[in-house]
Length: 545
View (cartoon, rainbow, N blue to C red):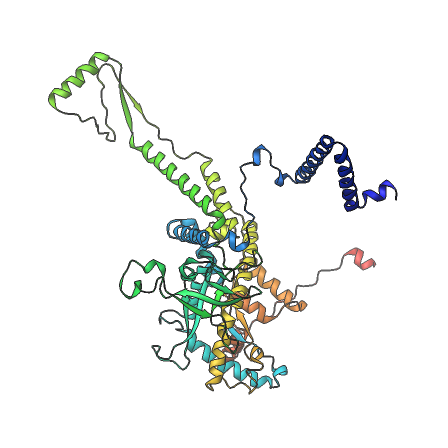
């Protein structure tokens, strides 16, 4: 075996080196010790050279203060860290205009007037006719409309309100917990007993604050990391000082199993689990920008104070005669008057005494670079939240049409992903539970195989609020072209415009056309086909051809 082949086998080379060290150490311990020192130095240099390949991994003077964490998802986002981030995020939403505007913009664009289900039964797979599927869709709409009007345990929230509350809680607090409960004595009484209890993330915690390998911040985990149960306090920890029934149970927990024996969810834990694999709780959306929020507040406060202090001094009187100054002070002291304020009125001409001079103050307002610098800080804040500055603050004053359109299109990608996330984590599980109860009570006359094919009998398309049109004429023309090309549908166009159901729009159009025909208005209001442009006379070249 030659030397090149030996270098291709590092394990063999290490064994040979250790054997040589042992032989050398038998005859000269000092030489063996020096060989070990050089070998250790070579290992350190090799490790250092590997780190030097990436600038971000260097440990030079500029990066020695860079503290990092190598913890697991639950170790980095432990109970104390999550509580601090959650409380500071809520404080920013209460007291910071940018934070409140950003969260408000998120809720308005993602939830808006609420996601609505449109039953989409695969009637061929279910073995029913298309007319039967349409009948079940009408029955479904009636059931959903009646239940969604008021569906929480406090009799205060509609399902649209529940969506907005759950989504805002997940963004500000990091996660939200919703408990589907069967309430028999709910007021006002309804045909269906399903009610939703929205629980703030503060109530999800481990008993006595004791964390275990299978119990992470109130979530009991199985062998594969799947949630088995949730530990929820009977009352909010913040109610401890209120007394009465609200202060009872702030430290007492109840264990709620994640699933029923039939496989229905008992807890809907909504949080973004796509940051790190194996995370148990969610991170508040504003976590990365909390320090920037603090810096932004300090900048604004300092600027306002400097402007206010500078505006407090209008003019200063200077005296160049020391003797006159001394005499004036002694005279004021004998009179017992220490008032040094003067009044300036518009159009007043005053003559100064000998030795007096007036200098007017020029308060320093924020410099010309303040607005640009402050917007840069705000842009970093909104970017960390995944939103464009114009969309988060609703400030389009310094943007062109193309820039505003680009910002809105980029924001809509994020809003669409959030909408599907809300529909998958909250809306569809609730919809499935509601239709199951309706079927058991005979209100939803699906087939006898409902439980076996429940995913098919409850399949729905969730209609999100429409975006509106930035340029109605151009976008309508573009949608018409796409429809002729066969790359879109009328249902998609209607849903994207205002979130309406194409069935509702078509049914309303049919009713309107029928009424117009009865009143004799159809011919008068029928749209006229555009006139074809007149043919241009042929040119001399065309005649020759």
